[in-house]
Length: 449
Image 1: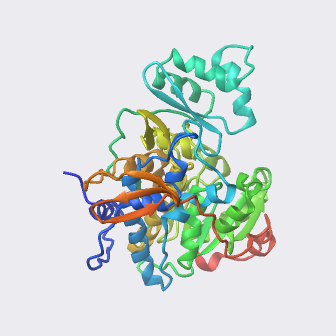
Image 2: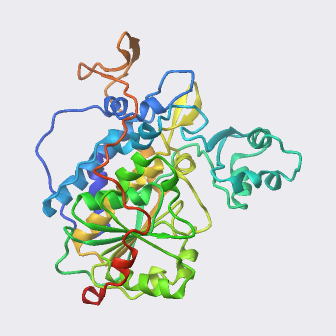
Image 3: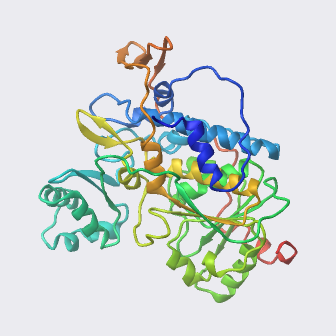
């Protein structure tokens, strides 16, 4: 028998300790497939020249429950966080004007390739990745990298091809026959003593992450009253700064910005003081890279109650397996299906789902007193949502009328238009890179350590 979403989330939170999970009274019946149509994610899922597809819409029941849990747990701070699925799943696509493209991701960097025994997702998001394709294939006569990869995939097993491509540091994943079974999408280990007087309002969050998942976690903590300081390398700033300003501002407005040269011993020493003062640290780096900077969480001394959130593609136990949102979703089995063939689900969907789950884990840990390292795998997050039970109240026909495409739920007697992704409305403008570096790093944080 499938587990109810509320039971699933309670089980996740129990891994963080004796976390109180406030209950609410009965709510009006809803339908995750109608929510899927309204979220903007359905409009992004399907063939480019075909209709949007309902799969994997049932996961919206679990998305809603995670959002509800975060709302309830942050209510004690006086600034309860509400997470709507339309902004969660459609914000970037709405800002960038992305559309569904079938087996090419909405963002264009990832493709699902047909293999001899299934499907393999490959991400070529950086010029260096494209330059590596001839080496991957053992050829020099590669005029079209994607065409050459598709031809190689046709004669290869999906798992073998993905393994081979990953040897070059390029993200790749075989689509499993069934979503992997994931009991909890994070691993928890003790980092320090718990804080007997935990707080969320005014908590100091130091965010080393970039792009989407980690920054979304920081954004949600900021909405709950935390103070967020974003830390970037002057040599490798957050790549999202080069993207759509509206999306970046939505994630980072109100956060302070520190930028330093990580190769400088003096700069690392100043950052060390900041990290030691943090209540929450968010990072999405390979463990080896953090260790080289002197910020490996296992090697640091930690103040009571600190929460360290580590976001990686496949977990800290598999540090060399890199991933982005679309290929991580495929690895977790989180795809749509159109005419018996897989299509990408929404836009890099493992990213926003991981950001939401990371925020829930961080808040749940803080409520318990913290002192924990939370290891979050994007692939496991995707698998947890892909395993959501199917909707059990009958078919949901998709029809097209003068108003556009509509999903009907006969059980509830309701219909819902398939809405386009909704662009976010930032609360302000994000700080320029390094705007607060001098002011913050010259502070004496010893009173917090």
